[in-house]
Image 1 (spheres, rainbow, N blue to C red):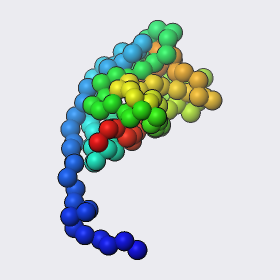
Image 2: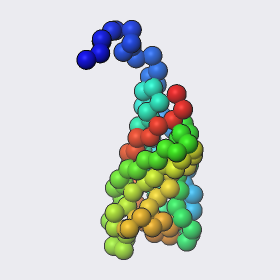
Image 3: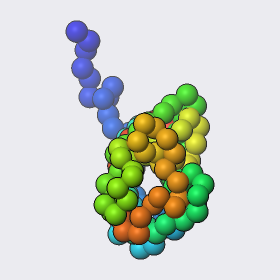
Image 4: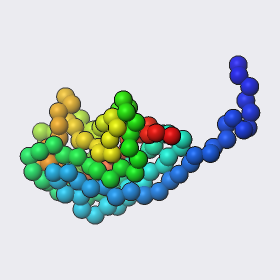
Length: 131
């Protein structure tokens, strides 16, 4: 076992705050909550906002407060309005070296802007950023 010292385990990089999600190919309406916590190089991002349907291109969310690391990927589950019965397994993906979240569905296909129902989107995802 290693030696545990207070100095080696000191929390020297902690930050929390809010961010502003913006929809790509769909509309983000009222943002009820959009927060992040950064501890070292680990960021946990969450959001709850109103959404409305957009166009037929891949839906994205921009405005992440920190870019993900190169060769780093993360996914998180979405809770959304239940009006669209053709979308199953909705989830978000943080891509390598990006500040944009992509929305996915079913067997990992792209969730399109016109498949985002008028209602709400709630999600949380953790990813790594440069320290």
